[in-house]
Image 1 (cartoon, rainbow, N blue to C red):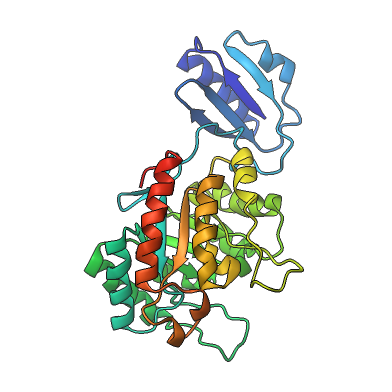
Image 2 (image 1 turned 180 degrees about the horizontal axis):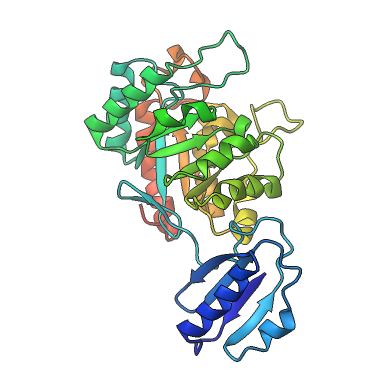
Length: 336
C-alpha cells in the first residue's frame, strides 16, 4: 500500500500515522522526492482501512500495490535510485562502465588490464576470482588468491572492484570488495540473497538465463527486504531457441524494468552474445534503450584467455568502443 501526502502535511502528522502502522506490525518505506512525499507499507495490509486513511486531511491519495515486489517497486520510490561507492555513481542520469577480464589469471594480467581500462575511462574493474563454469573441468578461478590480486589492481589504479560471490560461506572474503556480483546461476539462491541483504554494500544482481522480469525483481526484493537497498540490476541475455549466439540480449528488458523499478539497470553485452564483434552494437543499443551502465569483458590476450576469450575485447578495441560510448551517453543525457 502507498500513501501519498499533500504538500501541506506536517511532519508530526506523518509520524503519528507511521507509528499507528508500525503498531500493526507493518514496515514503513519512506520516500521524499523533490515534489512528492509518500510512504509504502510492507507487510499484511489487509486490515488497513483505506477509507479512514484517505479521509485524513493531510493525505492526498492511497493506493494498493498489486505487484509482489514492494521495496523495488517504482510506485514506492518514484525517484530513480543512485547507487554510489568509492565516488562512482550509477543511476539517476549517472552512467558507468565496468570492464575487465572474465577471470583473474595472474598478477601481471589483471594489473595490465586494470590500467588499460582505467585509461580508456572505465569507472570499475570487473574480474572473476570465483568462476561458476558449466564443466567441472574448466578453469574455476583463483578464488581467494584472485580476490587479493583484484585488491592489488585496485591499489595500482584506484578503480573500485566488482567480482562474483558463489555462496554464503565466502561473504567474509568479500568484506572489502566494492561491488558484489550475484551471477545468473545464483539469481534465485535465496539464502545467499538474504545474507547479502544484511550488508551495507552495492550488489550487482544478474538476471537468470530463463527468468521473467518479475522473478528478477523478486530476487532484488530478497536483498532489499534485508535492509540493503543498494541493488543494481544486470540484464545479461536469456536462453532462447536461437543458436547463432550464446544468449539473446533482451534489450526490451531495459525500458520495461525502468517502468517497474527505481533501481539502476546495466547491460552485459559480452555474455549476452558471447561474440566480441557484437559487443559494440549491443552496448550502444543498451544506452539508447535507457541503461545506466555497461559491463564489458576486456582481456590483454583473448585467444589465450582461460575463460570466455571469444567474447572479450582487446584493450585497443575497448578504447575505441569507449569513445563511442561517451558520445552516445552524452547524446542521451547521461553523465560519465
